[in-house]
Length: 424
Ligand code: LRH
Ligand code: MN
Ligand code: MN
Image (tube, rainbow, N blue to C red; front, side):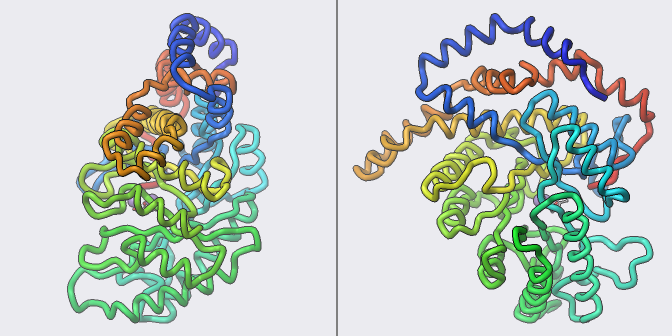
């Protein structure tokens, strides 16, 4: 489904007076407005192909209706989000949940919606129908060489799919680990995993990157073979210059200082990509910014500081992706909320007065340093983000327009009330 252009214009016109008032006020309060607007317009967040249907837990799943039945419909859904917010111009595919049967057609279709293919994701955490060997006791870490080989070949196949679509990165997340003490020889598991990753690395085209995603626990609850950023960085360093760490916000032990992790990975030139979500307990995959917005701001503050220090391009030098799951919300509404939270937080991080912050740090002026950060965090930048979106051709209030256009009702009529998208 597409929304008629004139409907976006009418919607924007209706709210323009209030938007203008808020934007003019804010423009008087902050510096560099034109530059920030350009940075916001350029910034794009990848949408995961596995998050377009309602997710579930092991206790159940409650589909909401109108879910995409195939990859084409997933691309249409992301195209719609992008049409509304102009900040979701990429899709991240999970294989084999979303195998492109006709890659040329899929690539052309994505391009029509203004979407490019972000990192490809492999899956060696589930057994697929017809698969020879089981991943019950791991994949790349496995004691059985045949099983390791099967996992390596799968990853190489995912790279092949990615090449056909014009992607340039592979994200490897392994559920490998152990559930009980004694189950695993940690060194052997690490060594096997490293060797497997080395074979996958060797199959990467020249301009490709590999992202090694870590996660503290789940589905294994005693040890995880890529369990934290230290382990991920070890693999990335041993693999070589095309290998990077990927940070998923929900993959840390409680209270981890993620902003510090981000700062150090950037300093080492080893931060490759991001999976945005929010959490209260673990890998909850909740809407970005819904639980700990200040933490998200502190992370973005380090991202902007660290990327600027290295002369990196904010838009293109890291893979920015959402990795979320929606049990009770309309997935498209949830994704609109997540992208909005990311844009707001990015804008706030761009407001931080870095010279003053550095001076306060040099003087050990703790109070001023805190004030500088909170000044930016407490600034209401919604009109700035909306102004960037309108300039780019999007809607003043994407969520309001989505509801006014009755998109979900339309999708249910078109696709049926009982569809279930592939994914988590
Ligand atoms: C693992 C993870 C990883 C997977 C996705 C479905 O928890 O974050 O990125 O690919 O979820
Ligand atoms: Mn993830
Ligand atoms: Mn996760």
